[in-house]
Image (cartoon, rainbow, N blue to C red; front, side, top):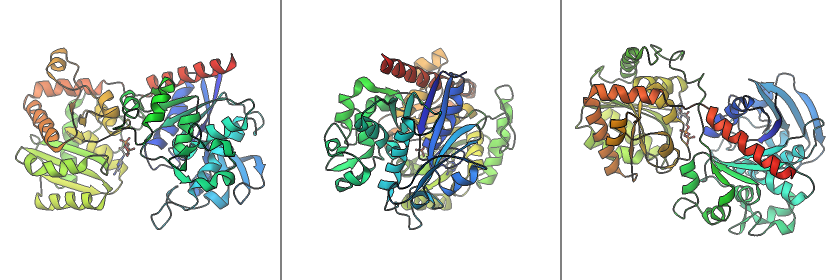
Length: 485
Ligand code: ADP
């Protein structure tokens, strides 16, 4: 039985619409929270994919005009998730990526599209749907950032508000002259409100006005309150530090389960770790690498962007190829990085294999077949790939930033003695330190008994949603109780 009801306001949710880790969290957290006695309703724009997923939706609450057209709310259940979808064809009836049009640019009316999400969120939070009275409105990222602002400026009774920052790099800044169109009062345009460097800042508004702010790891919570990591928001985050919490993400242990994974050549487990060799060989063959069991096979599954530090890896590659290593890469993004790695694969056939694109099965096969997974990010709010790697026994080699610092235990001398190591960390994120980390990894590889011990410890890491869900539940309850008194 649930004693607490959360309205989660999200722009994407797995398994219906996904462009990044936010969708994974939005889809997994409600299910994990059930065990904590928390019920969640997820409010999302009714993009075509959402309408298609809701087989026979019930229509709740209608508004004749919001930002140039009518709005209906559709309700239904998808994969165990209680979904409320905002059916507003003038805003959301567009196929493909939720944020970007066919020309590859952000939709010109994104300010209105996501203000509508927040505004309907505020309506639902204050009783617009009969029988639905949330204790907490939980807004995710800039797309939902105005919801706490609408509630704050409306006055009157309201539920507690939480905003989660999944990546501070995306802030949602729009022209100040939209203020009245958005239905925000003139007094909201100030330092403590929605004003942000002469514009309206959607994420800024959420951070300024939500009762609690969370982000997706304790280290990232500390980093974003510094000038170096704050991306213009650090001053405000320091002022609000008493309300800022870091809660790690988990991964879906049914999707990421090496024992039952349908994508693997040979499903495996701690008890049957020897079967991993079959996956390594299958991966080597798939990527055109020499099928050599003794070569240290490094994997990468990543967006190819500056954030992910893959330029450091590209620069380090000539030095690393002096070692007996191979590289299996999957990803897409910046053209220069894609071309750089494809050229490296052409120059070093059998040693470097690159697949450009998004490929879920191959992502699983890399985690299951690679000996180690490289994540040299310059910043990383939480990171999910290293969690998958831990569970699949690919030792993560990570930059010591954000959630990477919080989830991988460096196999230094003390950790080796104590048997607690699960991977390799390096800092700062530079080419030299990445090279040094891979040298250290190669030394561990030579010592196979130690390697196996690290691998087993990694696979026993708790990367589930259980602990994070308990922390969110505690945060929600404390906030609800505080608002009652
Ligand atoms: P971010 O959200 O910053 O891209 P995360 O590590 O938090 O990075 O999450 C990325 C998720 O997307 C992981 O689950 C990863 O396996 C998956 N992923 C990334 N790139 C690809 C790809 N090219 N093909 C398949 N899955 C990918």
